[in-house]
Length: 448
Image 1 (cartoon, rainbow, N blue to C red):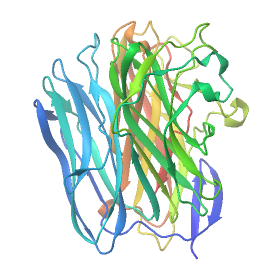
Image 2 (cartoon, rainbow, N blue to C red):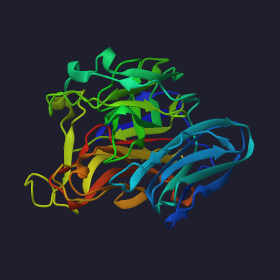
Image 3 (cartoon, rainbow, N blue to C red):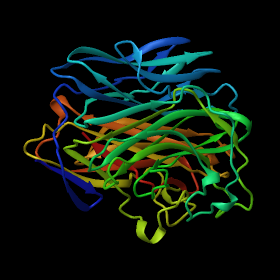
Image 4 (cartoon, rainbow, N blue to C red):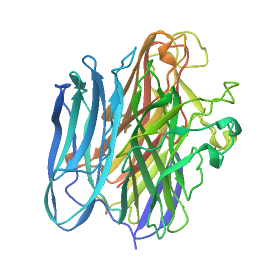
């Protein structure tokens, strides 16, 4: 029996169970420069992997794309020619303020021994689309023995909620959320990692859609899960990617995990009216769960946020990351602000292959002049991985909420050495912002 080591922020929790490291052969790739994709589909990144034995392979891509005209775009992953992921789809064609946006793609497949081809593809619709440098592809031959990959077979029915009865600080009422997919995680003990990623689009009324991950059909606290929100309207995007992550350290054995849709609950604290959004989630949205066998897994929380005092049910747990002189309590624009931090410790028997994922939300102000907001990872002070990017247009369009992400896989010659390493999720805002904010929902997770 090996010991699985879990690090949560600066606190340490240990759980005993069967554990191993990710199998040899995992791959990490990223674009060296922006890649322009003309209308149609192009290969962005690709890798062959060799499996010595049958294994689950988890794939993830995070990056950024921006329009070259009136366009829509998508990114997705195939293994041996089969689509195994969501399509991270965005449509700028109705946007009055089309901006650079982050994308996230997830998937998994159980593969036999032998050689397999993994491809990240980018698609441009209408006119050309740029896929930004540092957009990546992680191919993790995971140590998890229980993995699920669920997908929506078709677009959902119209989603229409009234969250007046679910104010800030209170778990969403059953009527205020809908479970769109549920998977049995297959965890006899130990942690569950959950990733959800999909697309949502306007179907009736503009507003802010919201997506998250539930454990055993119950809303977890923000110390265990990251909410995803995107403003679905023509000042932002009428179709956009949504993506969430969760780490449940000590769940009940054989728990269920769900992909859940709702709406951003405006009514309290910020408005006296409910969010009127009517929308759908798109076919091929995905929920991936991993459990049973991790050698290294953990999460990093915001070191400056008091989670215990705030309580678990916060969708507006704002953390200011930049001001252009308007808010004395905020860091100045251009500052690198740590929004998540933890220690990942690599045992002597481990090969140092670990996947790191950070997600948060971007919230500006109607009076902002606009600019760019970034999210990236640092390990032991060195920036690594993809560059999450959200550009924001001039007022009033900077107010629209979007989800932002970045990731990294320490593999090959960049595998982590034995011992403890500091990992950080870092935000930076550049531009004219009153109080550009991210959120404190679990911003950082890692696993093998």
